[in-house]
Length: 354
Image (spheres, rainbow, N blue to C red):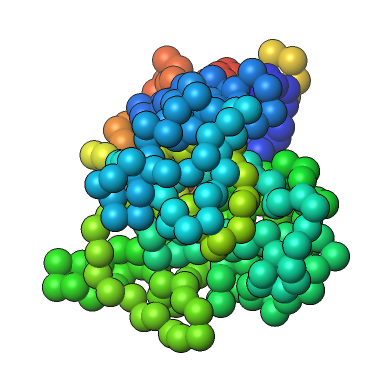
């Protein structure tokens, strides 16, 4: 977040709400030493792969795909920039295993439509060969809710039916986080899926209770962190194009809610009282240094609960929740006469008001 160099209130208030985050980490708020995320250049057009994407199908080759046994070439039909499920040839799967990912896939149900319910435009995106996001012609075609287009098959109906008519291209954006097990084989995190269907949020971080299956419950069984992605052959000539994925790193941990600064030290009540007072900038803006309610520390800007200071050395402080600094300068008599507030790349100086 970038803030202007306005008043002390504007400078500090913007940083209060994030301090309520509960998860503790080694990184404090706005720490300039925290590693930055990698730079990713978005695709030039809507749906185009970004710079860090792995392209699985761009209409030119099926080299990234294998048959359903994983060893033989994929036998689906490819023409005019898309591939089409050839009934009876079986599912296809990626040649390489995939784990946590953002997946973009475009598909079109056959036209004219044929059949009804589950027999109309049926296929599926089966992540790791275990967790299926259903593909179905659900445009004016009724079936059971957890089996329609964009359902997590057999587990979660979509939040909305965002289907286009058969023959029109449709888009899935899928965010997948795979399950995790500890070294003893105990499940520590179930799989989670988020799905946008034609830009509409239809699955929001839903938690899977096992593999998806027809007419049965498939509890988790420990498996590798990466497995091939499968496109289902359900005897319907469903078409696919523009398939790409982005491997996702582990989710970043939240900024620390609290944590003492390194080399923190305690000051006596008399030493702390010496800093208490009103300080004024050259433009008239004021900044107050106040005691904590328990009398054992200081806070800035009348916010003892949200902006407490931690002493690192005589005249030097940092924020308990934030990676900023508050630096005092003493006058000839030894009393603090100026304070510099440095926070989130902003710095202001205040002179003590007698």
